[in-house]
Length: 472
Figure: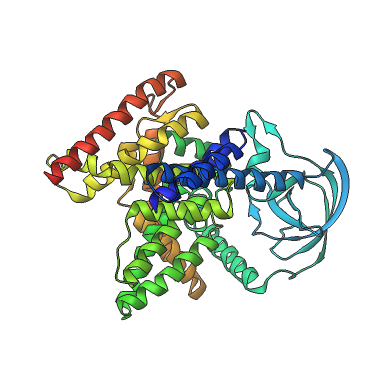
């Protein structure tokens, strides 16, 4: 099963980066299947793999062409359109971004002033210049928007509210609750701390200024702030343990925890990293419910398959999906190798776990970081060790702060006081490592990959060696 899922993902990856016809793989695969069908040997398996590979590549090209052909015909054209705000608006410190679903079922991204604020379900009329996304400083803005089904964008057009509450009432209630949580955080915390907590708990990173984002990147702690797989796993663990504490049986707690995890993934905006982790956690919980075990690698491939089945453009144009998938793959493949190396030297299990997970994840994400940002952090290992113990407390207190604030302003203030202390420590670590002169490495790409592939080969060799020693 893992091979078939990996082949599907490989076909999507091939079509994402190479504009070649998939019909060669389809025809060759069908030919091998037809000739070797009675035997079902290695050539039959090869034919089946080529067919799946070609089919997934064709699927990507088909979905991309459908979205591409639905773009407006003229760039910079003046239009007047009516539509619904179909997603939770994203509030920045100097603007807001809303996604409009037009009457002909096209999604348009619209940038507006901060005030007046718009909400999910608002029906609006817009007049302005409609722009087709393209390349911006070597960044494929078109593909970035197309992955979310957005075919055009408008910047600060004329806008008029026609009618409110035209969207799904349940979804509107969820987004309204999320907005109230953000208001409670804003009320009780300073601007920078509130921006970090919103990113960590609610998935809104727009309030973080470019300076803070740069410091996070240099210190290697971007993943600690933005919603990631680690946040979803931590949330799942908190909910599961809380339900057991409240008296639920294990199977009941597994079912309810799965529902809470899926709800939380939707609540934070369904970023690819959270969706991937949500699928994996749900698969693990459901397997335990059925009295079975599922390997981490199989759960990862199933999660990747499901994400790409619904959105094949995510692999190419969603950096969060790339980093999350590759980091998890690195932990699964090379975590045991690093754990074997450090087991005798580091007796503290928690410290060794942080080292192992950080190093194993970095193995597969370093090329992606180098290609996208031109550098990678040299201090991420040390910064992660220092912040790892406080992240669970920040998440627990960050969830409690708005919830208790609804009950009593004093309780909200009290929790915010403790949360602020942990956030101050987090900012202290971020700033210390970000301003070190050797915080980043700007290795030329050809030199980086010249050093990287021997390292990758060495780690695979060590993994095989460890597996051989285990069986002997």
